[in-house]
Length: 237
Image (cartoon, rainbow, N blue to C red; front, side, top):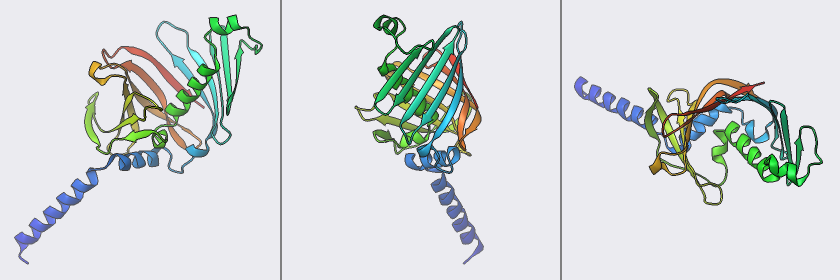
């Protein structure tokens, strides 16, 4: 084997190996992202408490204490903003509502303050979904696009995963942006109608480790259409 042929063969091998390693499928990218955020598979049995401060323009901060116990299907959130405190407890199919420490609430109080078991389950789904990402993308009804996109967002290159959902699960289209070297999730974005550029994008910065799971410490929310700032959630221990 002459030297030039050997070098050509070696270059071809390196090219094919590199190209193959970079061309991940959607499911492969998801697995790598989960391995980064939840290397020991702790999310499925998550039982812990999150403290979240929500800062929004022109409003006082909202402090929320959230308890999630996935094995027992238990969820609790207590949120305080100014002089108002609301608490929801969901235990499997039961729900309890408290407002400023009282649980014996009239229909008028419930209606005036938009309190309901439907809202309690909305909060349950909201917090378990966002803080359970990217692991929640393995839930039934989630459709992962097999093609991984490469996009530049805010000046940084990302590997991007597209997720849609069965009709009985959700109608939005989501995009998840992962660091191409570490596979850390750094941005996600959703659209109700992508042709209208509606919906929002969320920038994830810093990390907090809860039950050995790497979760975003700060989530800053913006409108897709005009980059309008909505607010920031800050996760503490």
